[in-house]
Amino acid sequence: MSNSADVPADERGDKKRQSLTPLRSLAPYLRRYPWALAGGLAALVVSAVAMLYVPLAVRGMIDQGFTSSNGQVIDRWFLALIAFGAVLAFASASRVYIVNWLGERIVADLRSDVFRHVTTLGPSFFERTHSGEVMSRLTADTTQLKTVCGSTLSQALRNGIMLTGALTLMIVTSPKLAGLTLLAIPLIVLPLVVYGRAVQKLSRRAQDTLAEASAYASENLAAVRTMQAFAHEGVVANRFGAAVERSFAAARQRLASRAGLTGLVIFLTIASITGVLWHGASAVVKGEMTAGTLSQFLLYAVFAAGALAELAEVWGEIRTAAGSAERLTELLAVTPEIVSPAKPTALPVPARGQLEFKAVSFVYPSRPNFSALDKISFKVQPGETVALVGPSGAGKTTIFQLALRFYDPASGEIELDGVPLRQADVAAIRARIALVPQDVALFADTVAENIRYGTLDASMDAVRKAAERAQAAEFIEALPNGYETRLGERGVQLSGGQRQRLAIARAILKDAPVLLLDEATSALDAENERLVQRALESVMKTRTTIVIAHRLATVQKADRILVLDRGKIVEEGSHAELVRRNGSYARLAALQFVKEAAE
Image (cartoon, rainbow, N blue to C red):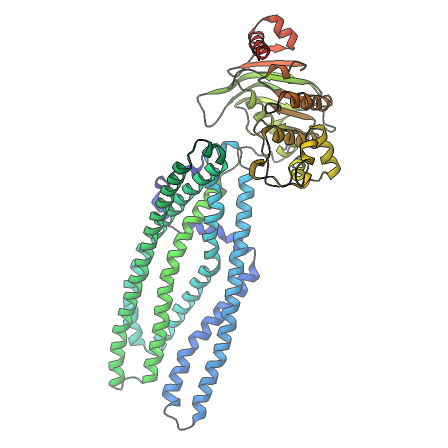
């Protein structure tokens, strides 16, 4: 799978970076809320029309009110201004609320969709993409889009209407002065386009450097104990500071570019209008137009200039948002390698727990030159316990990864209860398998919820029974709030053995027909290992179990032992049979048992 999210920013092509095409990905989210779009647009149009009425009232006061002896004429114009001011205030308040609500709503939907999509991506994606990078896109990039979907989009539309309306009324008021003004517009628009492209390019660079800093911080905070154990606090802080400085430098370049763009546009706008009004003042002196007409034209010119200046600022923000939208679009464009077929084959009911590998070969995408499994074939019967032993890198964990269909084999077939995994629903496959990993994943939630992660709707009584069977109840009840004690991130409050027993309780609670144990007792002392081993033995009697173990004492009671080396099964049999053969397993067992006896 090619993952554009992992391609360096400088290699992606300037054409894509310089367009607003990525913002089109927001259209489906906008269409979800047509009433908000319609209400916001209506409020925006009303407020713009009310604002455009003001110069007409000013002209009437100057040309009619000031020349009339009847004070009621002026009163009418001022009352009209107050009425339109009330309309303007109500419409503006409505616009601000609706468009900002829309921005918040769209970003909430977008974050939810992006995260939901990311959860469907397999391990191969995260082998190439750092989780900190993903979090940066979920937070920083979506926040940037929230501004655009809310206030920026509203400002752009409002100022577009104001600019169009003001220019139209300028032409109606004085075609000659309007013509001179229109001649100056290209001088203002040209730098807007040129600088806008530079702003988007610099914005993308700023977002990328910020993501790098966030990823580095996330990685080190997740391993804070290791960092402190090696006394690397200063080194890590300095490296993060350097990453932040790179991000700041990129942001500073972007801000300088935007500031220069805004300043240039404002100067050219004011200079152009001043020249046109100079000509208009001469026309008033010559009697070619009234003072009220010039005042009306002046206000419309100011409105047009203000709208154009704000559009210059908004254009920079839109360019910045286009960079953020591009990064999110790239993430959403990554397709999961592992997907359920359109019409999956149903797994048989009741589940039997039979697992079979047929001439399976596999190569990890990140290590294309290394064969993790080489034409492996074996069958685990329902209720049977099979142990996988062998040196590190022999392919034991890879078998678990393939059984859970985190990856698909390069060749061969894997079947669960007689159904090829490729033909079955992924969720149905994983629902029939419980995993106790070596590296236990716990969450910053209560003990009960961490156990209940195996079965979300399990009762509290079931949670307690699972903990008791995993020999975890005693230490749980000794915690300050028992099962309601909240664990720190990754369960840092617990020892390695306690974390492992919670993982075992989670698997017991799931009650799946297939149980995968990856060094499930490796973090336990001898006494607790015996207790947990007895608990696991009672669980293993009623289900198919595959055990990965480096300590051979834990697998002596297995029905079969598969000895792996370099991705191949080199020996197979019971403990007694393998010892009698005096092969690889016998030599490994002799070394371990002699060492344990010496200890």
